[in-house]
Image (tube, rainbow over all chains, first blue to last red; front, side):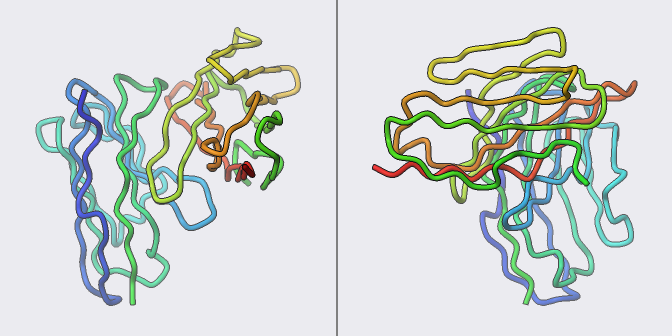
Length: 113
Length: 112
């Protein structure tokens, strides 16, 4: 089966600019996750969708981050405006259901200048 | 602090040796999962062990779970250079919702 696809692979922007990431999960996976992984740390959950509804966004900085999952398939994560501390790898994952093994994309490495 | 915390933070061994990584957590869990992450790549799921299971095997991997001590261990036997990666435990909480929390990881380096 095809894996989780993410784009772009790398992105460099200046602070206060905006950026968007795209994720295409594995077909049939109801649950989709966005994680932020800072160098040397474990992934931190930003938002979790079940189909096209939000299950958990308690750690999403909602003043600057937004995410949507249209039609319960693809998802986009946006940052506007970006801060230096947003430099990280943004990982998308999907699973058949909640508490099931997650399949990860290779992430987008974001650098803020 | 994080729900799941791995120990040690880093481990360096010779090829052929066994590698043991530990994970401790704080609250009741539904299951515990171990993942591997190679440099510059996404995480890959290794094993899921449910709260009512005590041990699970997959190839050269052996995972144990002690819910009374709120801890788990991942053993990699006969390690290979290709096992060099970061290993994370992830706890699926049993709080009425469904939330998986990752620890900070153990960085394993296997010398050829």
